[in-house]
Length: 332
Image 1 (cartoon, helix red, strand yellow):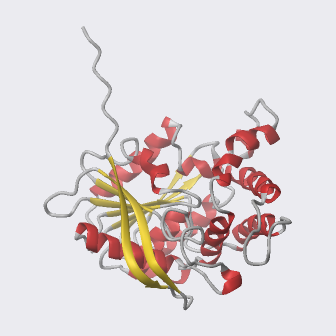
Image 2 (cartoon, helix red, strand yellow; image 1 turned 45 degrees about the vertical axis):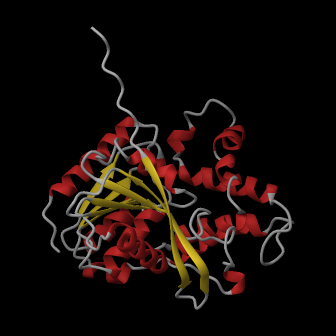
Image 3 (cartoon, one colour; image 1 turned 90 degrees about the horizontal axis):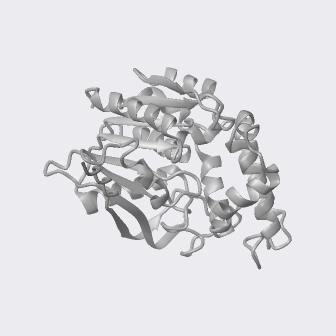
C-alpha cells in the first residue's frame, strides 16, 4: 500500500498595491506609496471569506505565511497578510522618501489600517472582514481596525499584543532604539555605514525579552552564540532605519480608551511567559471589550508562543481558539 502523498504547500500570490501619494497623520505624505501583501487561498464569489493578517515587528508578509494550514484553514479562507509601513516591503525609509521621527515622520497604526482598507477595497472588493488575526504589532493593528471601523470588522483575534504600549513595554522599545542610535555610524537622522555593533546590541536585547527564562535554560550553547546564530541575522536583513520607524509606530500605539466601542467578536490570547505583553495586561484589555474572551496559552516560548512556526502544541491551541471564534455569530 503506497503512502498518501503530502499535501502541496498552499500557493502564495504576491501583491504590490500602489496607493499613490499617501498622507500620514503626522502631516507628511509618502509619494508613490505601496502596500505589499501575500494572498493564500481563494476569495469566494460572495467575497465573504477573507482573513486579514497584519504583520508583526520586523516581519515581511511571507514570514507569516506558515499560519496558512496550522492555524488558519486555507481551504475555507482567503488569507491576506499585509505588510505595515516601515517593514521594508511596504513603503519604508529604505525604499521611499519616508524619514524618521528626527525629521518629523511618524507612522501610526491608523495610517496602516487606512492603507490596508484601501488595498482590500481596490484589490479584493471587500469591505466587511470576517476576521483580523494579528500577533504582537499585528494585534495592535487588529485593535486599531476594530476601533476605527467597528461596523466593518466582524471578529478580531489579538495574540500577544495590547491595546496600548505600556510604560514597561516602552522601556523595551526605547532600549532597542538607543542600541541603534548609540552606534558610531548614527548621524542624527540615519546611518553612514551599517551599525554592526548597534545591531548586535539590538539582537541581545530583543532575544532577552522575546523568549522566556525557562526557554533559555534549555539552550545548551552559550547564549551569546545562540543570539548570534538565531537572532542577529533576522535584524541584519533590515535597513536599520526601518527598524527604528517600526519601533516608533509601536511606541505611538494607544487605543485603550476606545475598547468599549469595539463591536467585533474578540478573542484576546496571552502567552503564559510573555515578558513583553504579560497575561495580566491582556486580560485587562479583554475585560474592557464587550463580550471578549480571554485565553492563556501555556508555553515556555515566551512572546514567541504567539508565533509558533515550529511548535505544533502552540499551533494547535491557536487553531482551536480561531476555529471557536469563527463559529461565533458576529455582532456587526
